[in-house]
Amino acid sequence: GKPPNLYSFRSVAELAPSLRTYVLNQQKAAFEHHNTFRVAVSGGSLPKTLAQALLAPSDGSPGDSVDFTKWQIFFADERCVPLDHEDSNYKLLKEELLDKIPEKMGKPNVWPIDEEYLDDVQEMADQYEKNIVSVFAARDSVKLPLFDLLLLGCGPDGHTCSLFPDHPLLRETDAWVLSISDSPKPPPRRITLSLPVVIAGTKIAFVTTGGGKKDVMKKIFESEEGRGLPCGLINEGGGDKVSWFTDDSAVEGVSFP
Ligand code: 6PG
Image (cartoon, rainbow, N blue to C red; front, side):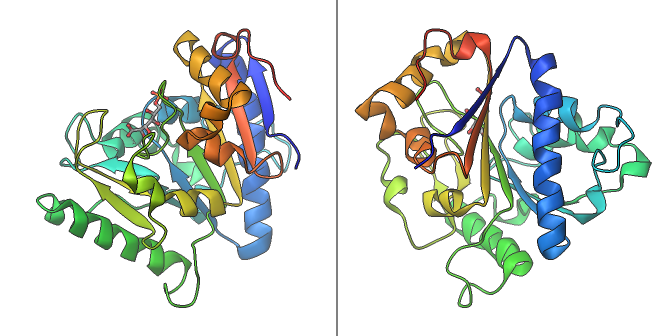
């Protein structure tokens, strides 16, 4: 298949407008298809970069406008902590993006975890899956939910969402949302979309910046070992599905197909 798309920029500030155009193209396609935009977002550095992309002033052209009223935002992964905890991806997204959305852009429908289940990660995952079912369709009528867009990060070890290299969770093919209580990246207790759900997404964008990502990018694009990492497995989806938005230091010395 076609190799994944790679867009590299000098800085995050230069990356943001291109990410904006990409997201707005997916928004348009999704609105045309089903009049709603179903998105999953990661934590890490992504919410901040996303805010830079989406909250920038519009250039005034008809396609260049974010209509949050028709967005359904899920968490690609979430830490099982209270929503006001400093480790919460919800808190991060809220502070970086949601709280800053001007009124005229509308309010997205956001799906945080339910704090009632903080004591039981498996129950947390099951309940979160029910939210996805409620927006997509009943589990027994669709094999997998098809997110219009997944906005993901890539860890220096090749993890994405809370899918870590060599972890048994990678082999889960039944549930849409999985729980993990031994995450190698703290905090240990989390929920995450499953690998098949990520791979089924219509479009997947990895946003990866900084020199700390150079080695893993080299692995993913140049080695067999890297192709077996969670990011590498998803990357196999190729250019119709997968795009990378990076800065130059994250891809320094990496050769691309
Ligand atoms: C999490 C994140 C995680 C993140 C990567 C990359 O909750 O821990 O969702 O999967 O996306 O670790 O993070 P950076 O973009 O900050 O490197």
